[in-house]
Length: 280
Image (cartoon, rainbow, N blue to C red; front, side, top):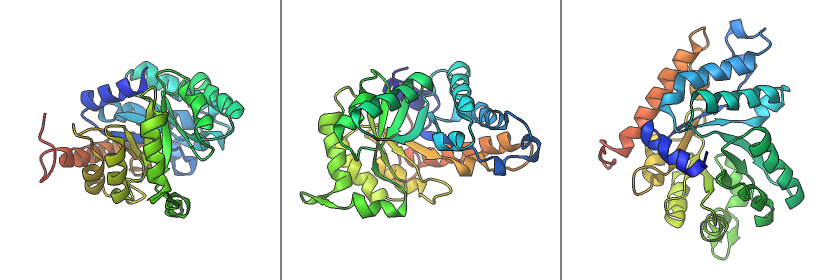
């Protein structure tokens, strides 16, 4: 799948800017799953199947699988998404960043082993650490820009020629790094003013926006600040608030209900609400 084309198609087909983050935590699984050998895969697959028609992407977080030696479950999960829900992009949240020779191996991991459609990348080592990911034609590279955690300001607001580092990075990606049209930027929902500043610099480039839900990001402010001219341009991620909306045997149905509410809240500010986008 071409990541950007797939994302645009999913925005339209599912009428959705919502991304469901897949961060499995067995301590929060329903009791019936706890002792099952394939609990992580079963849990995530049930969430995916319950929400696939409501999302524009899924974002599995690699650490939540690797910490429990469940990399095989992650491979199987991504295969399931591609087979059962073709057209829904998978963004592997790995935040990789290393020297070029090692970055090439990380790119093989993300796109060769896991067959992700996109991967998150840390740009701190510069372009030569990002370039190996861009060498995979059609695969997306979501570059950390303004992260949702409070400590991000310590580095991301350093002055670089009269503008903060995060905005300098956004400009570099938009004007130089995005040669193949594969890039997205990660900008946290907890900072809507910075979302707006990045949008003004990068035009219609997709923004992966974590921080809605458990982290407290405001949906209205996020959509107003980050939507592109056509009312899309955003991949708004919610993880825990959807995954653990229910704790009983109906956890997948509860996740679907939470995803539906979130999609509707996002769409309210794309259209219909004061200042929202008119319905197409």
